[in-house]
Length: 201
Ligand SMILES: [Mg+2]
Ligand SMILES: [Zn+2]
Image (cartoon, rainbow, N blue to C red):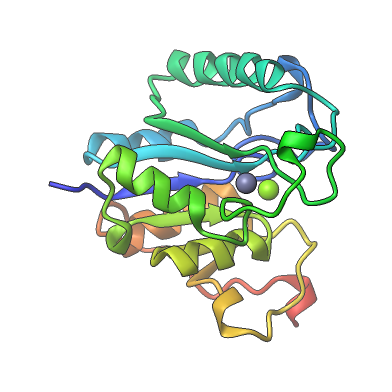
């Protein structure tokens, strides 16, 4: 049976925002997420990362560098009893300098390719899954894949005009996003749902 999943953007959503991190120690987990993540795991949900890593196409770091970063991140999560079922990344960018990654693809968010791959590989039921991200490209990718979506407000995004870029809910931070998804999935207590980003008021 396909299972629901909590799909997470990496930079700014699971880890603190940083401009093109390229070393393991530059991935710093937000400190207040472990209980919220374990709640989904305990309910049988899968957890997976869905991340654009155009720094590979731009030549800032290699796929091996990224693997080392993700090994470190996975180990940090494992110390908190959190297991990722998958880490999906897009190495492409049409204006990259590394030729084999310098093209348009169907995996770079806002395209939904990584979510669709994740669903196939991990047997995820996208209709009952959520994608959490900090920019509207995340939201569009999640919506296009048929997930419900939560935007974590880092103060960067204006209110979307296009319905495909509208999140199901907006959260003040990732811990709040996890609480919203838990509440709406009957896994946790009711929470504030009407949070409005400053840029949307
Ligand atoms: Mg992000
Ligand atoms: Zn791609």
